Length: 268
Image (cartoon, rainbow, N blue to C red):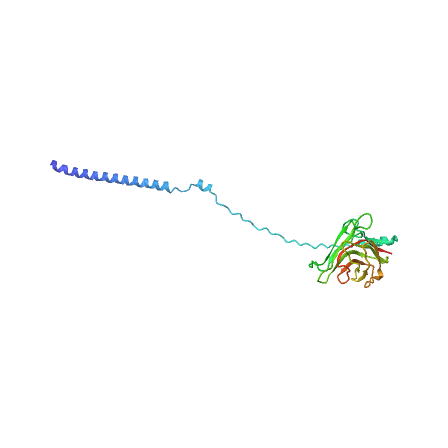
């Protein structure tokens, strides 16, 4: 009878032991899973909202093009201004006072322009041909009188090519109808040589050109007086624009040298 009671008790013990082992294994398994989840959570920890807000995305500034209205600009009308030439006013004034002569250039200031406001200077037929040419300068050593300057012209027409050059002076549309002559003083340079003959030209606004040849130049100051009627080719002296002196290779007695001129004027 005792033997039969022992057997059921042993079976119950085995069953209880089996259940306890199963519960222990299940508990261990749950602990392992919890640890793994904690590790995963630690490694793959997402950004917190605070950190996300710390890194702000760059916002692009949208520039809306500004519309510019076209503006119509009315052209400004400039009224022409009439300017009277200085030479004409000077001539009128001197004629009214009965002056015997009109001084155009005495060169005493040592600078441009001349006494009636006109420019002047040397000129060359061909500036690219260095075998010929003319240059002007103010000279106080060989001046006429005790003060001021004379105008020195260094010319060279000694070239294998056709050569001519000289000196020009603007007359500012001068009205010379109240005068009979154009006059000036002249001399050659005895040391540098000079030509005894050269050409003088007068030009007017109608593009007429009058010509006259001066001869017998010496190394002493002498006055040259040329009657206006002697300038062949010009008939109107009411608006003279330019006085020109020309040194030409075909007529120059000395193809290289220096000439001095002073006190250019119109006389009665």
